[in-house]
Amino acid sequence: MNIRIVNKKEDKVACFYLLKQLVESLEKKDFLNKLKQKGNVGYKLIILEDKDKVLAVAGIKFYNSYRFDKYLEIDDFVVDKKNRRNGYGKLLFDWLVEYAKKNNCNSIQLNSRLKLNEAHKFYKKMGMEVSHYRFHKNLT
Image 1 (cartoon, rainbow, N blue to C red):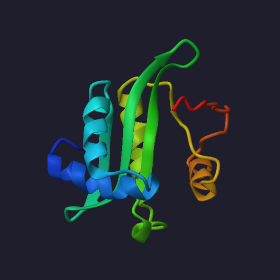
Image 2: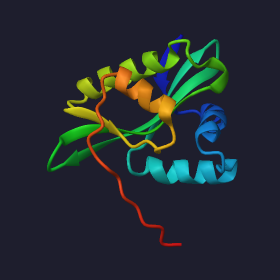
Image 3: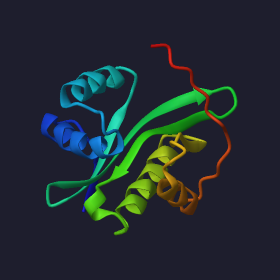
């Protein structure tokens, strides 16, 4: 079992298949283009793998804000549907906590869609609290 930052193209493609479980409308071409754009603002993919099989992925970046100072934002977090409830999500989340601490972050934050009840239970189990509403307005 290994957790690491992704830097090879073949790892990015493996991440696509997991992230598609989270965002069903995601297309590979769009994913690779967006990943390149997101990388320009510090976005990184972190994978948990076992025997070269990607079991979980997190997309992260660092932010600084007036209210929270430096924090780690989890943009994406998914464990392969076939491998859930095996502790892989906890292993990856714990790694992210240590990574955030090593990078002098004061907190970890994320947004989660309202309908993802199982994910919400997981995040609460990891010690996270619901603290905000997020509002959006479509412009297209």
